[in-house]
Image (tube, rainbow over all chains, first blue to last red; front, side, top):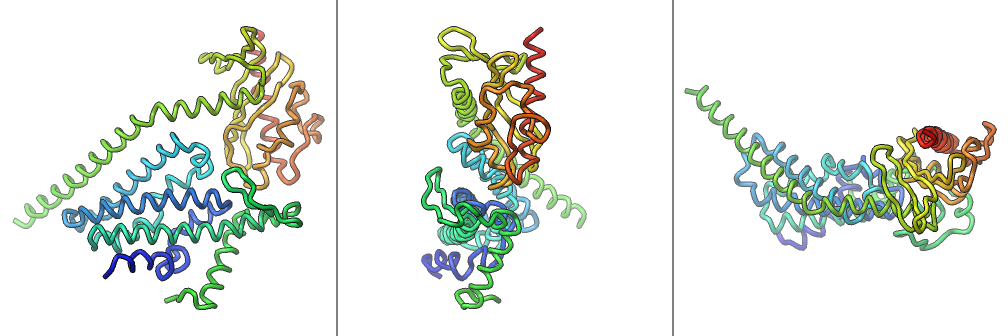
Length: 203
Length: 180
């Protein structure tokens, strides 16, 4: 086992969105703009790394029967810390992410990694796993939201600055991409494309 | 004997969970204490910025807690009032900051918080929509289809109507208070 491998696997081989297909609910909901995707990705990654470290550190003391409630409490604590910190220092992001920050608690990616990896592996590897899966989640979110924002609004805005605006789409955007059906369409098409071209191998 | 063992085990689990929850509670309390002031400050800055956006010549303001009303001053003179109105939009509640110049005129409005559909209802925060509320008689705060002077946003009639209704209702209510 080497650390670099643990880090890399989360991005491609075990990509939480495209391979594990976990945590789709927040993915569908926040991928309306690249801004939101970055914010959600970083918040979830932070929670994932923190919970992985702590859960891995106490893995030998946690009684098997009550491990799930223990993980949930730990994850919920980190999420609440992220939530009030965002509220204090980045209120615009806090408002944009809305209900989806508290929902990180039930994001099955985080509980999934706690149960499948952190509770069985040493701290260092768990950190690498958290970073890798976190990056994988963030990259997937950015990819989906980029396509949705481009087609749905005809432009890309990053932190209040317009990066570019397409000529025809800019004035007549395909609104469906910003709305919930667009999320399903984009995710399904990307998943299909990745499987078809063999970039990602399904089980 | 077995029963005793099971009981003991159960107690250990309970104690373990209680300990975890206790640590979590302490961590949260400490974090909240640390950032508490900043959260309140951020909220104040936001409201202040929005009031300033409506009353550009504001120099000072006071907040009347009983009436839930901001009194706006320009170098000592009272130039208007501001308050929060709540509307029911398509995606949930819409919080609107309303500025009144006098008992008849709306000076301007700003959207504080909303959860309307991005790209559709969310355009209630756009200049096109908000500019229509500049220096308008309270009795004209209706959509044009209802005999007022506000153009609804194409494809977002519900959100547009929620804003006009909330502004009208809250403004009338506050004016009644002010006239007392």
